Length: 151
Image (tube, rainbow, N blue to C red; front, side):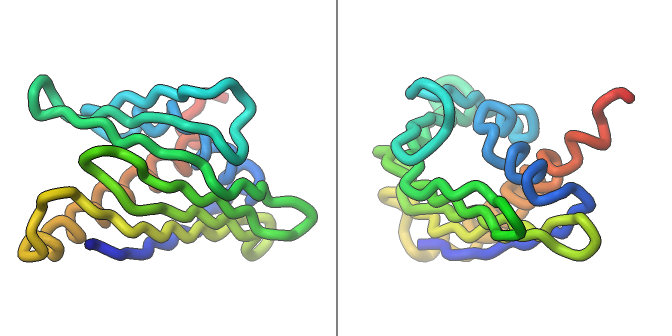
């Protein structure tokens, strides 16, 4: 089991940061070798199911997730989303919180409990380091999306 927390500050308002971080198919734009398919009709809310397929060929796996908490930010209140990982290979949960911060910006907190079936505890530390890097880059990429968009 790997439990970790990541935090990012952004100039984006909380509602825009929330939109970018919870646009599930866009995660594939910032996570290499990953494709995301939403299995339930929009809009996203409690009960939404999506699958992130990561890897290449026989080394690929599905990370099936279900949204169990969906509270978008509003009126100065933070947003919170909880995902439960229901895959046959990857299990655990993730929580994304987006708080208003400073003068119109936002603070995002990403907590995750990541478990890989059959992986001995000996590998928790390297898996944790890899997960922090991978999810940190994903957060950075998603939050930077607006800055890369043409004027």
